[in-house]
Length: 491
Image (cartoon, rainbow, N blue to C red; front, side, top):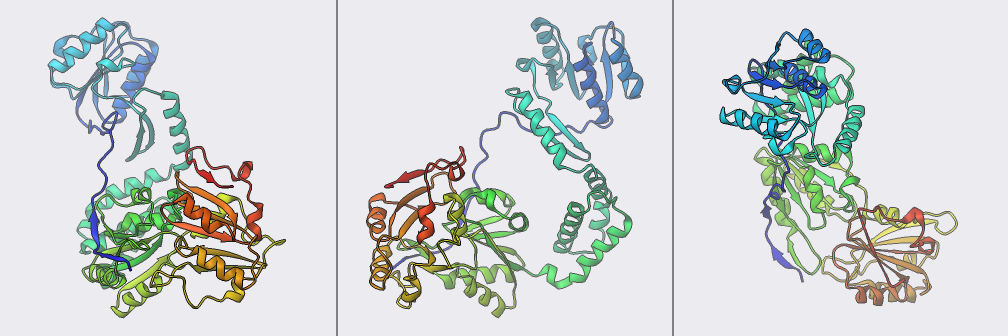
């Protein structure tokens, strides 16, 4: 008998330590002080001018590179002398290229005395802020920093992002800035305005090379307006979180998480998956654990429907695929009975996750003619009484058993009694695809005992069938990622 518990809200994790606080200075029409004569100084002056700052550049003997930058940007005024303490008055920011520690200390001290944030190039001890590696799709701007620890690494990440982000995104970001006031005054409700931006974003991601037009604005607004009451009404999306590794989430699942107002999630969902959700979204644990504290399904259904009726976009987040032993049918029926819009985002099933980590083909043509999924426990926590033992004893089938920790011994005994060879290969995997994944191998006859001895925690799946004989712990193709070590027990 499960111990009852009620749905409970979980607080988002606190922000982990930041080496630097990423901020973006608004410099349009503000004054900047730049001093020095190096190529790095010229580059920083160009950056500040690109951001709209009016720059006083101090260099007694300006290099040709400095003079060239000053000629190209009307905002840069070249002063052919050394900087002075009075130059910092009224400045919003200061950047210095200093040859030695003494000059760097004087420059930083003078800026700080005037209340001006300062950066001394390549001398972090004298810096109030740092410049990152920039990906420019302005007004979409991305900056990458390693706090000076690995500049080459930051540059490599910037190169990857440059390749990933189409230059057309700049046009769409500019359109968003241009259209924001129009959306606010469009007469759309709050939910309608949010729907506008969802349509805008989806279209921009699909068509980054097409410049946005005013007809696009009218089209997006028209769609949001046409959806009318449906936009203002709440909805429910059942989302498959996959077996554990957050990298196995589908793009559609990520989009659902990022648009949710409330997320109802199970114990089986890896905490890292929730990192993809909007930080503002309310996250509520409605976990169900075999033999442990569990929320009643009726309570989950009622909460889900109540939130949606209140206009919330509800994501019901489930481990694996929601349509495979996920009670999805009951939740879909509850939504439909209440007139709530409901959709399903499929996920990588637990069986698929296990098979991929083991490098085992569930339908290997030499060994298997059928693949069957069965649950290892019924509503009362015991082995289901209506399992088809003739099918389960088929030596040409691969059987994936969900949640069998407490009933595997009984399952094995009955399968063997119905003709399945006790020597049939069997593998149990706990927390598949997660960093603490554990694998226990054996046969149908001895795996139950080995599973008890291993004392595995978390979700467990068992594969039974001749395909499991192909698993080789040391095979390169089945080796885990270095970031996700796993334990192998009782081979």
